[in-house]
Image (cartoon, rainbow, N blue to C red; front, side, top):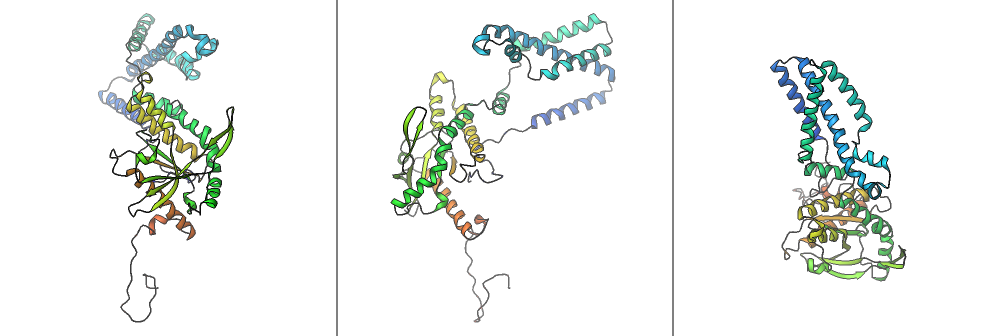
Length: 383
């Protein structure tokens, strides 16, 4: 499907993961409701259940503070290198991010626990000590470490994935100043090359995004039906201390089954090459599964960035695909042709004032033959 970011309500490519929602919380609410229902059926005294509930909540909150204290014992050795010499940063990093309501909740639960507990203060203290001991044992044995799903969700929500940084770097350091000038460069190229790129809907940078991250320096090696044609005029800019740095894009001819060439500006997204190199370097500790996950997140993040960029609207097309594994199948050329043809249909539909080109242009034409010798209407509804 197309990845035009300027369109509202763009659906995410089926190969890319959607952002996680809160279904895990809904399931937790459901399980809690089932637990309460079971306790109701067992007819336990409500004061007994309230006593143990407040006891465990209090122990959980105290254990969180103790865990932060243990973390503090490690972080005091890294005050200068990790926290810029600020003890306030150390304390903030060791304690829960929800500290602003953690302490009031601890006070409330502590008073409630004391009021509801039927035993002596010494017995309450011992129970809290034992409960905290269990939580700390879980911590020392690593039983409370977040799962892979939780780690992934934390990184996605806080934008701390490798893919997030690569996508922003690719946009800020390249696409943001190349894409807005692309149509002017294509227009200049057409004046000197007999209007080779005639369809204005294809005046876009087709960015190849293979989820395998395998990138060929020569597109003809990836698919023999993709042939290099020419380069667009160079874009020369002063960047990061380099005077007159040159940026240029290449035009390729994509051969279809009819042996005709369709031309477009196409290139790989180079950050994917970095992900592939990381997965090949043992010191990076980056597995193939990590590479696939980060490649998917890179594509989704890039899609979201470009969608919100007004200056890049209508200047790009993201081509996300999975390699077929067969170099002779010409999968890449077929995928590019599908995008090019769809853009041709979009231009044709715009010229005819229609907003749904895929509806009537994808249907086979119907030949209507009248049985009467008199001329009849061309409409099939009888009017």
